[in-house]
Image (tube, rainbow, N blue to C red; front, side, top):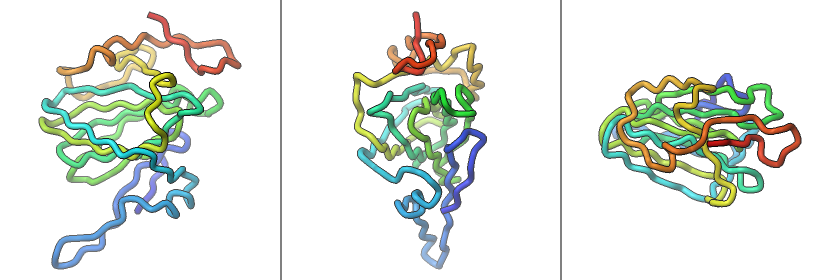
Length: 189
């Protein structure tokens, strides 16, 4: 695996190191030892799959608070997505910064999402499939979200949003909370 640090602290793009032969190729997509060597958490509590019928579908922006904060390893296995992460860690030098990465079945690239990063993506093709390796169990009481179109972040999604859940459409806009709060952000409607 080839680990490339992003401009967001602790977030990595992970490319396959293909070993080709006459049959095709072999590549390691996950190795706990290599993750640990790069300072990443190699725990996998769940492996999830999402399928999107239509391009323009948007899912996000989701994260969970401590003690249920999740790491994620995101890979597009069919089609293409534009994947966005936002650093939600108040102590981080990249707090409230975001990046977008194109993950496709063709580039076979993965994105490692650290704990306390909001995550979302937009399907760039019809019939897109995404696999998530998640480091913590889904815990509804700790779930938080940000509006995909929050002017504070000004995320430039590549396509018009054509399909979105009511829940994702109705996450409130961002409002900073006082320092020292147990929740790094408080959102208001």
